[in-house]
Image (cartoon, rainbow, N blue to C red; front, side):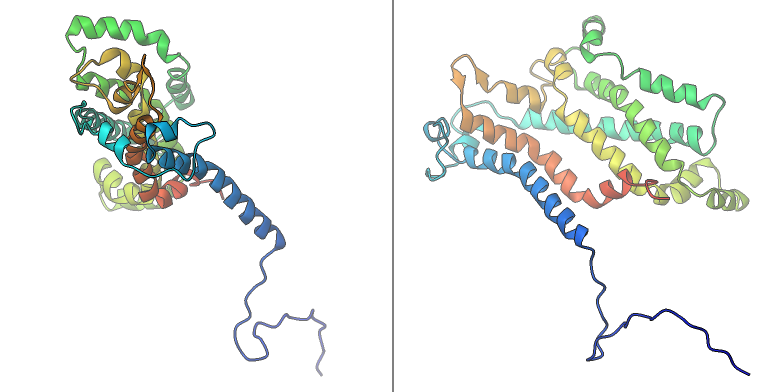
Length: 297
Protein backbone atom coordinates (compact mmCIF):
# COMPACT_ATOMS: atom_id res chain seq x y z
CA UNK A 1 0.00 0.00 0.00
CA UNK A 2 1.42 3.34 -1.02
CA UNK A 3 0.38 6.89 -0.43
CA UNK A 4 0.95 10.03 -2.45
CA UNK A 5 1.98 13.16 -0.65
CA UNK A 6 1.20 16.49 -2.25
CA UNK A 7 4.21 18.78 -2.42
CA UNK A 8 4.65 22.29 -3.76
CA UNK A 9 6.18 22.65 -7.22
CA UNK A 10 9.96 22.92 -7.12
CA UNK A 11 11.43 25.65 -9.36
CA UNK A 12 13.72 24.45 -12.11
CA UNK A 13 17.40 24.84 -11.37
CA UNK A 14 18.53 24.59 -15.00
CA UNK A 15 17.47 26.20 -18.24
CA UNK A 16 16.08 24.30 -21.19
CA UNK A 17 19.60 24.10 -22.65
CA UNK A 18 20.89 22.49 -19.44
CA UNK A 19 22.88 25.45 -18.12
CA UNK A 20 22.54 26.33 -14.40
CA UNK A 21 19.81 28.89 -13.87
CA UNK A 22 21.07 32.09 -12.24
CA UNK A 23 19.02 33.28 -9.28
CA UNK A 24 17.08 36.44 -9.87
CA UNK A 25 18.24 39.45 -7.94
CA UNK A 26 15.58 41.34 -6.02
CA UNK A 27 14.52 44.59 -7.58
CA UNK A 28 15.47 46.56 -4.48
CA UNK A 29 19.14 45.58 -4.80
CA UNK A 30 19.41 47.42 -8.13
CA UNK A 31 18.04 50.62 -6.61
CA UNK A 32 20.38 50.30 -3.62
CA UNK A 33 23.32 49.74 -5.94
CA UNK A 34 22.50 52.86 -7.97
CA UNK A 35 22.09 54.87 -4.77
CA UNK A 36 25.44 53.63 -3.48
CA UNK A 37 27.14 54.64 -6.71
CA UNK A 38 25.57 58.11 -6.59
CA UNK A 39 26.70 58.63 -3.00
CA UNK A 40 30.20 57.41 -3.89
CA UNK A 41 30.37 59.83 -6.84
CA UNK A 42 29.30 62.71 -4.58
CA UNK A 43 32.20 61.93 -2.25
CA UNK A 44 34.70 61.56 -5.10
CA UNK A 45 33.75 64.77 -6.98
CA UNK A 46 35.44 67.17 -4.46
CA UNK A 47 38.66 65.15 -4.63
CA UNK A 48 38.62 65.18 -8.44
CA UNK A 49 37.84 68.91 -8.41
CA UNK A 50 40.80 69.52 -6.08
CA UNK A 51 43.03 67.45 -8.38
CA UNK A 52 41.90 69.44 -11.42
CA UNK A 53 42.42 72.76 -9.64
CA UNK A 54 45.91 71.75 -8.55
CA UNK A 55 46.84 71.20 -12.20
CA UNK A 56 45.84 74.75 -13.21
CA UNK A 57 47.82 77.95 -13.02
CA UNK A 58 46.94 80.44 -10.30
CA UNK A 59 45.01 82.83 -12.63
CA UNK A 60 42.97 79.94 -14.08
CA UNK A 61 42.32 78.44 -10.63
CA UNK A 62 41.09 81.78 -9.28
CA UNK A 63 38.43 82.30 -11.96
CA UNK A 64 34.80 82.17 -10.87
CA UNK A 65 33.38 79.85 -12.06
CA UNK A 66 36.56 77.79 -12.49
CA UNK A 67 37.64 77.08 -16.03
CA UNK A 68 37.46 73.40 -16.90
CA UNK A 69 39.26 73.77 -20.24
CA UNK A 70 42.26 75.69 -18.93
CA UNK A 71 45.73 74.34 -19.80
CA UNK A 72 47.23 71.94 -17.26
CA UNK A 73 50.48 72.58 -15.45
CA UNK A 74 52.52 71.14 -12.56
CA UNK A 75 53.53 74.56 -11.25
CA UNK A 76 51.51 74.14 -8.05
CA UNK A 77 53.29 70.89 -7.20
CA UNK A 78 56.69 72.38 -8.02
CA UNK A 79 56.05 75.27 -5.62
CA UNK A 80 54.83 72.88 -2.92
CA UNK A 81 57.97 70.73 -3.13
CA UNK A 82 60.17 73.80 -2.99
CA UNK A 83 61.41 73.77 -6.59
CA UNK A 84 62.83 77.23 -7.18
CA UNK A 85 63.78 78.18 -3.61
CA UNK A 86 60.69 77.48 -1.49
CA UNK A 87 60.55 75.56 1.78
CA UNK A 88 60.77 71.77 1.45
CA UNK A 89 57.79 69.78 2.78
CA UNK A 90 59.77 66.57 3.36
CA UNK A 91 60.72 67.26 7.01
CA UNK A 92 57.08 67.97 7.86
CA UNK A 93 55.86 64.89 6.01
CA UNK A 94 58.47 62.78 7.80
CA UNK A 95 57.41 64.18 11.17
CA UNK A 96 53.76 63.37 10.47
CA UNK A 97 54.61 59.84 9.36
CA UNK A 98 56.78 59.27 12.43
CA UNK A 99 54.20 60.59 14.88
CA UNK A 100 51.28 58.77 13.24
CA UNK A 101 53.01 55.39 12.84
CA UNK A 102 54.70 55.24 16.24
CA UNK A 103 51.63 56.45 18.11
CA UNK A 104 49.47 53.88 16.29
CA UNK A 105 51.86 51.07 17.25
CA UNK A 106 51.88 52.23 20.89
CA UNK A 107 48.08 52.44 20.90
CA UNK A 108 47.75 48.86 19.65
CA UNK A 109 50.32 47.57 22.15
CA UNK A 110 48.37 49.14 25.02
CA UNK A 111 44.80 48.73 23.72
CA UNK A 112 44.82 45.01 22.84
CA UNK A 113 45.74 43.73 26.33
CA UNK A 114 43.34 46.23 27.92
CA UNK A 115 40.51 45.16 25.61
CA UNK A 116 41.36 41.51 26.30
CA UNK A 117 40.96 42.16 30.03
CA UNK A 118 37.65 43.94 29.47
CA UNK A 119 36.09 41.37 27.13
CA UNK A 120 37.57 37.87 27.23
CA UNK A 121 38.80 37.99 30.84
CA UNK A 122 36.53 40.70 32.25
CA UNK A 123 37.68 42.49 35.38
CA UNK A 124 35.33 43.65 38.11
CA UNK A 125 33.22 46.68 37.19
CA UNK A 126 34.48 46.62 33.62
CA UNK A 127 31.61 48.88 32.55
CA UNK A 128 32.95 51.60 34.86
CA UNK A 129 36.36 51.22 33.26
CA UNK A 130 34.88 51.64 29.77
CA UNK A 131 32.95 54.70 30.91
CA UNK A 132 36.16 56.17 32.32
CA UNK A 133 37.86 55.71 28.95
CA UNK A 134 34.89 57.34 27.25
CA UNK A 135 34.83 60.25 29.71
CA UNK A 136 38.36 61.23 28.70
CA UNK A 137 37.02 62.10 25.22
CA UNK A 138 34.38 64.43 26.68
CA UNK A 139 36.94 67.11 27.57
CA UNK A 140 37.38 69.59 24.72
CA UNK A 141 40.90 69.44 23.34
CA UNK A 142 41.36 73.19 23.61
CA UNK A 143 40.56 73.04 27.36
CA UNK A 144 43.67 70.98 28.03
CA UNK A 145 45.90 72.88 25.64
CA UNK A 146 47.29 75.39 28.14
CA UNK A 147 48.36 72.82 30.78
CA UNK A 148 50.00 70.71 28.09
CA UNK A 149 51.81 73.76 26.72
CA UNK A 150 53.06 74.77 30.17
CA UNK A 151 54.25 71.21 30.79
CA UNK A 152 56.06 71.19 27.43
CA UNK A 153 57.82 74.45 28.29
CA UNK A 154 58.75 73.23 31.79
CA UNK A 155 60.05 69.85 30.59
CA UNK A 156 61.87 71.23 27.55
CA UNK A 157 59.76 69.14 25.15
CA UNK A 158 58.39 72.06 23.16
CA UNK A 159 58.88 71.53 19.44
CA UNK A 160 59.70 67.86 20.07
CA UNK A 161 58.22 65.05 18.01
CA UNK A 162 58.19 62.66 21.00
CA UNK A 163 55.73 64.88 22.84
CA UNK A 164 53.34 64.61 19.90
CA UNK A 165 53.74 60.83 19.86
CA UNK A 166 52.78 60.60 23.53
CA UNK A 167 49.85 62.99 23.09
CA UNK A 168 48.52 61.18 20.01
CA UNK A 169 48.78 57.88 21.88
CA UNK A 170 46.75 59.17 24.81
CA UNK A 171 44.19 60.78 22.49
CA UNK A 172 43.57 57.62 20.44
CA UNK A 173 43.86 55.04 23.22
CA UNK A 174 40.23 55.32 24.51
CA UNK A 175 38.81 54.88 21.01
CA UNK A 176 41.09 51.92 20.34
CA UNK A 177 40.11 50.21 23.62
CA UNK A 178 36.42 50.60 22.84
CA UNK A 179 36.83 49.27 19.30
CA UNK A 180 39.10 46.37 20.22
CA UNK A 181 36.81 45.42 23.12
CA UNK A 182 33.88 45.02 20.72
CA UNK A 183 36.03 42.95 18.34
CA UNK A 184 37.50 40.70 21.03
CA UNK A 185 34.05 40.07 22.51
CA UNK A 186 33.22 38.16 19.31
CA UNK A 187 36.08 35.67 19.74
CA UNK A 188 34.65 32.18 20.45
CA UNK A 189 35.39 31.05 23.98
CA UNK A 190 35.98 27.48 22.78
CA UNK A 191 39.23 28.31 20.96
CA UNK A 192 40.52 30.11 24.05
CA UNK A 193 39.72 27.10 26.20
CA UNK A 194 41.44 24.83 23.69
CA UNK A 195 44.53 27.06 23.73
CA UNK A 196 44.56 27.01 27.54
CA UNK A 197 44.33 23.22 27.56
CA UNK A 198 47.30 23.05 25.20
CA UNK A 199 49.32 25.11 27.68
CA UNK A 200 49.41 28.41 25.76
CA UNK A 201 50.20 31.46 27.87
CA UNK A 202 48.65 34.90 27.57
CA UNK A 203 51.11 36.31 25.04
CA UNK A 204 51.01 33.18 22.88
CA UNK A 205 47.23 33.18 23.01
CA UNK A 206 47.10 36.81 21.93
CA UNK A 207 49.68 36.30 19.18
CA UNK A 208 48.68 32.97 17.67
CA UNK A 209 45.01 32.49 18.59
CA UNK A 210 43.30 35.83 19.15
CA UNK A 211 45.39 37.86 16.70
CA UNK A 212 44.41 36.05 13.47
CA UNK A 213 40.72 36.05 14.47
CA UNK A 214 40.52 39.79 15.15
CA UNK A 215 42.98 40.85 12.42
CA UNK A 216 40.29 42.83 10.53
CA UNK A 217 39.45 44.66 13.77
CA UNK A 218 43.12 45.43 14.39
CA UNK A 219 43.43 46.77 10.84
CA UNK A 220 40.35 48.97 11.25
CA UNK A 221 41.54 50.30 14.61
CA UNK A 222 45.05 51.02 13.40
CA UNK A 223 43.78 52.79 10.28
CA UNK A 224 41.45 55.04 12.27
CA UNK A 225 44.19 55.88 14.78
CA UNK A 226 46.61 56.62 11.93
CA UNK A 227 44.10 58.95 10.25
CA UNK A 228 43.37 60.82 13.48
CA UNK A 229 47.08 61.26 14.20
CA UNK A 230 47.95 62.29 10.66
CA UNK A 231 45.16 64.89 10.45
CA UNK A 232 45.63 66.40 13.94
CA UNK A 233 46.32 70.14 13.72
CA UNK A 234 45.58 71.98 16.97
CA UNK A 235 48.18 70.32 19.20
CA UNK A 236 50.80 70.31 16.47
CA UNK A 237 50.14 73.97 15.69
CA UNK A 238 50.67 75.09 19.28
CA UNK A 239 53.40 72.68 20.43
CA UNK A 240 55.66 72.64 17.37
CA UNK A 241 57.75 75.23 15.61
CA UNK A 242 60.25 74.20 12.99
CA UNK A 243 61.91 70.91 14.03
CA UNK A 244 58.71 68.94 14.83
CA UNK A 245 56.37 70.69 12.40
CA UNK A 246 53.85 68.27 10.90
CA UNK A 247 52.29 68.23 7.45
CA UNK A 248 48.95 69.87 8.44
CA UNK A 249 50.87 72.73 10.10
CA UNK A 250 53.03 73.09 7.00
CA UNK A 251 49.86 73.18 4.92
CA UNK A 252 48.45 76.13 6.88
CA UNK A 253 51.52 78.15 5.90
CA UNK A 254 50.15 78.51 2.38
CA UNK A 255 47.36 80.77 3.66
CA UNK A 256 49.20 84.08 3.85
CA UNK A 257 48.31 87.75 4.15
CA UNK A 258 49.06 88.11 0.45
CA UNK A 259 46.07 85.98 -0.42
CA UNK A 260 45.08 82.37 -1.01
CA UNK A 261 47.02 80.70 -3.80
CA UNK A 262 44.36 78.17 -4.70
CA UNK A 263 46.32 75.97 -7.10
CA UNK A 264 49.24 75.60 -4.71
CA UNK A 265 46.94 74.95 -1.74
CA UNK A 266 45.06 72.24 -3.68
CA UNK A 267 48.34 70.62 -4.71
CA UNK A 268 49.57 70.67 -1.11
CA UNK A 269 46.28 69.35 0.26
CA UNK A 270 46.27 66.50 -2.26
CA UNK A 271 49.83 65.47 -1.42
CA UNK A 272 49.16 65.63 2.33
CA UNK A 273 45.96 63.59 1.92
CA UNK A 274 47.61 60.98 -0.29
CA UNK A 275 49.04 58.74 2.51
CA UNK A 276 45.62 58.50 4.16
CA UNK A 277 43.94 57.72 0.83
CA UNK A 278 46.53 55.06 -0.02
CA UNK A 279 46.28 53.46 3.44
CA UNK A 280 42.48 53.44 3.30
CA UNK A 281 42.44 51.94 -0.20
CA UNK A 282 45.00 49.27 0.71
CA UNK A 283 43.13 48.24 3.86
CA UNK A 284 39.58 48.76 2.63
CA UNK A 285 38.65 45.06 2.82
CA UNK A 286 40.02 44.72 6.35
CA UNK A 287 38.38 48.01 7.33
CA UNK A 288 34.94 46.86 6.17
CA UNK A 289 35.34 43.48 7.86
CA UNK A 290 36.55 45.08 11.07
CA UNK A 291 33.83 47.72 11.30
CA UNK A 292 31.14 45.13 10.54
CA UNK A 293 32.55 42.47 12.88
CA UNK A 294 29.82 41.32 15.20
CA UNK A 295 27.14 43.30 13.35
CA UNK A 296 25.40 40.13 12.07
CA UNK A 297 24.76 37.32 14.52
